[in-house]
Amino acid sequence: MSLENIIKKTEKLNTRNTLYEDFIRIGLRKGHNVIVHSSLSSIGWVCGGPVAVIQALMDVVTETGTIIMPTHSDDYSNPALWENPPIPEEWVEIVKETMPAFDPKITPTFGMGAIVECFRTFPNVLRSNHPNVSFAAWGRNSKEIIEDHSLDCGLGEKSPLAKLYDLDAKVLLLGATYEDNTSFHLSEYRAGNYEETTCSAPIMIEGKREWTEFREIDFKTELFYLLGKDFEQECNVTINHIGKAESRFFEQKKAVDFGVEWLKRYYIENK
Image 1: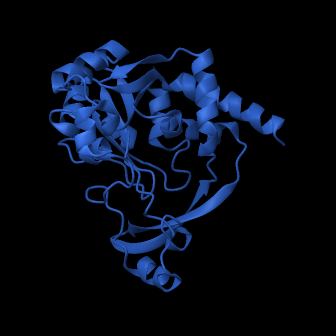
Image 2: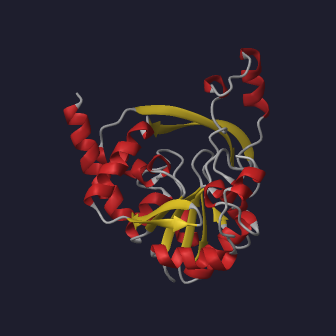
């Protein structure tokens, strides 16, 4: 959507202060550990853009809590498998030889949106060292959440998602959908009904750049819409608007646990 259209469709000006009030209204509080999935354009025009959104989140949660965002970089992957768009076959080996190693400080996110890309650059924001599925965190538990992020099975038991589960974190879908709810991937691991696959990316190992393979599971993100709708029917989900963005706020642990049982049933019923 063009900026002109966003402005035309914005009935009420969004500012740092109005967003603060919206976050309070949906249930976010000081001291919460919250993972945020976001769509800036869905909010409407914001005075200050993504900076104001992030500042409003920080105003509510404060440094006594923690804000987490997925800072994934799916383009750091095997170029032979790229589809949107694909690259010429003769480029593949050159890309693998020359792509810069993932660096949590400078590697941009890919397809994650303006709020996430802005958040990772904020002072005191830490980012985990995973070339595909990193997370960034700010606040009290940021170091604990992002450190020791496993290269293998990067959204599983040795990931920031599992640490958030143990911290009784909240999830805020800020204009985002259940397909964006990364925590459901932890449900996939725990349900156990998955096939493993091999991924690869350039990383630094003992000071040297190496194209490295690692284990991952074959994610079924296409199921998350149905999973989320059933979760919403059976569990406590607060639905409200942040600006113009229909948003959802709920407990991560309940979502993950519900997802485990839902996926187990789904795979049994669809064998």
